[in-house]
Amino acid sequence: MNKTTYRLLNLRSFMKREGISAFIVPSTDPHSGEYVPERWKSRRWLTGFTGSAGTAVVTLDKAALWTDSRYFIQAKEQLDDTGIILQKEKIEGTPTISEWLGSILASGDKVGVDGEVFTVSEYDVLKAELEGYGLCLKSVTDPFNEIWTNRPSVPDSKVFIHDMKYAGESAKSKLERIRQKLGGKTILVSSLEEIAWTLNLRADDILYTPFFVSYLIISPEEATLFINNNKLTPEVTDYLKDNGVGTKPYDNVFAELGRYECPVLYQADKTNHSARRAMRKPLAGKSPIGEMLIFKNETEINGYRNAMEKDGVAMVKWIKWTLENVPKGGQTELSLAAKLEAFRAEQPDFKGISFESIMGYAHHGAIVHYDPTPETDIPVKPEGLLLIDSGAQFLDGTTDITRTIPLGPLTWEMKRDYTLVLRGWINLGSAVFPKGTNGTQLDALARAPMWKYGINYLHGTGHGVGQFMSVHEAIDLHQFRMQWRPTPLLPGMIITDEPGIYIEGSHGVRHEDTMLVVNADFTGENGKCKNRGALTHESSEASGITYGPYYTFEHLTLCPILTSPILTEMLTEEEKAWFNAYQQTVYDRLAPRLDEEHKAWLFSVTRGI
Image (tube, rainbow, N blue to C red):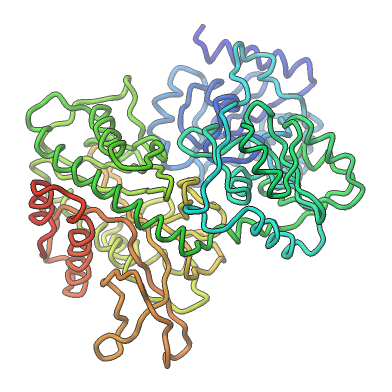
């Protein structure tokens, strides 16, 4: 009996005792975070599937796992011999979880979940869907407290203050602005991202993301942080008092919620079902904090620029080193990832990587979110393509960048795909658009070149990036995505541009920059947008332009794109000009930070095409 089979058996014993016929295990924690502490990685522990996204469903005699296109290949391999059925989300013919359970359970059967790891919106939708099949949804105690031997505890890293020279606004000021927007309401804040931003505090509870496990209640009169006391230093305790914030133990939050006689506002897609159940007068609504934190102040923006220059230096050193050392032999995906982290660690204020480096060589590049492990690690040879998607946490900014590195001879298809992705990246990254435009409306710009060849990708094209916070910021707000996202793109927002092509068994290509939305400057020749391609730090309000104002992007990421795979005949003259301007900006901004050897190399790879 393998580990997964044994663990499923123990879960089924719990289910029988609770009188439930199925149990659903998501990949989330009580704070609906993308990156979760080890304690709440129950789905991973249960199934052996290590991807970051997926939901396991266990009945008394069957089990299945739903995941998205990023993990189809990985899940297929890791679920082999477990008896768990892979269900491919958003693929025609794949049933939803409710449809699958409705087809195999009897009317009146109970489906169990742990209410602390299901958001209110997820719980309510699932409840309604299951009722359509005559099934009942039941919130039960967390079974993994019982069946997971030596389960990790709640993280206990020390909280530290994110200095004003990075944040640009005090916690007291943020709390005042939040209360103004709340208009006298009391709110429960469950999102660790929103808590960290509001209080200008950081910690190391979450891998790759400087957050701390906690809840925050903000009322018109007071603010209370629910956090384990051993996480607070005397300095942080005094700091919280100075900013009008009290503290109580983390586990006390549900009892405290039950004491509020007034309505308590919660955001349904960020608050867990158990928290709502604890409230006397729950009030569904929208937290104002998410929409506040996505707009960066000038201090934060300058921090991003500085962080991206440091990251660019590390990337330049790494690309040069990789091109020189792969032909010598002995390099693998993991060794290259470690070398890149070492180069980043040389930079000031480095606090770690912002996510597990996606170092995909050859066919591994086709696995969108491939994380090399000792079991999957392969030698990297001087041929084909290497896809590296990685990032860093600096005190002044979070970085996220993808480059595809040609290591030697390439097929024509590899060059075509490299060029198509480059065209999509340029089309989106050079866009000029009027106020009111959202990311869904712009998403097609990145896909259009490859659509003409009958090629598409299933992931989104861009997401927000935090300022020394999460590399995936406020996930449901501003994005480039085919699915509708109504939030308009406005100056001060940060968003990535990352189209890709993935050919299973062969190669993957992705180019990615992190960008800042800025006002378009139409003072260029013949009234054309001046900062489209110039990538200047400053831009002016559009004046005299019909139906404006208009916006465009400043590319914060500074790293060359290697030109040897580009089929230049596929590019328009305008695309070439924009690309050459970007490469020149990379050189101009990074050269002052490089020694003569790396400066000369960067000059050679940023020459115009």
